[in-house]
Amino acid sequence: MENVKIYLNFFVEYLQIERNYSQYTIVNYVTDIEDFFLFMKEQVILHLEEITYNDTRLYLTQLHKRNYSRKTISRKISSLRSFFKFLVREEKLNENPFSLVSLPKREQKIPQFLYEEEIEKLFSISDCTTPLGQRNQALIEILYGTGIRVSECCAIRLSDIDFYIGTVLVHGKGGKQRYVPFGSYAQDAIEQYIHQGRKILLSKLKTPEEHSYLFVNNRGNPLTDRGVRHVLNEMIKKTSLTLHIHPHMFRHTFATHLLNEGADMRSVQELLGHSHLSSTQVYTHVTKDHLKRIYMSHHPRA
Image (tube, rainbow, N blue to C red):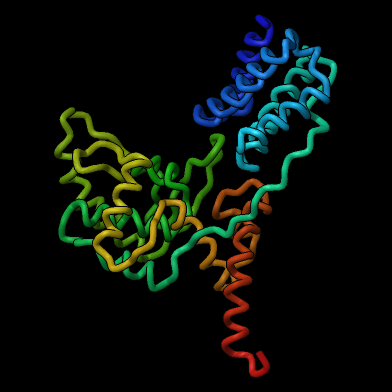
């Protein structure tokens, strides 16, 4: 199975150079493909050319027996389909054994979001006379005000922000970039944090070299995804809210509130940086519930 490892290395180079995928995404691809290689070993399949459609069905059965979720199974099959499609393109194989394998239907989960009164409680909890309080206020204002992913938020540099027109340059998945507007509340919070709190936090850096990342931790280093989760959990503890919050909730809330207020789907898709409209359409389930509540509350014959 020596050629298998060589082909995988070629595929990784393709994902890095041509597709410009993140290291995290590439690791997932490699993990999924290597899992299938173990299956090949168990089935004494020595060469990729020997794989048949029946083998792929058997592998799919094994994944179900391991009690993987439909989402995980879909990802694994999709990774393998891409891998073999690449090999066919490179003329290493004549056909893709996974081309006919149908993906299991994904569970349609309703995105969790915050109600307006819950958001207001979070906005009123920070002590904006302290450096960390200013940072926390700017953080939740930018997360809710733009709907960007937490990884995109942590990657913001000072040069990405244009206060004159109220936009931030967001570095998204796969090296894609987009400009996202933010409102006056976010602008006020960010400006106060940059001119006051951030300078104080940066002064705690052990190394003399400053960096340009917008959000920093209490030691002046760039704030990480994990750090954002910790900040939000600590903020929740100071409120009367009993919910479990995660950073992506702000993204869900951003999209839900926009659609509830009448924003069109295409505009929300562009703001969120979704490649496909289907990714944005999941939020219509939430807005339908919202419309139903309005109907039941106000229609005379409801």
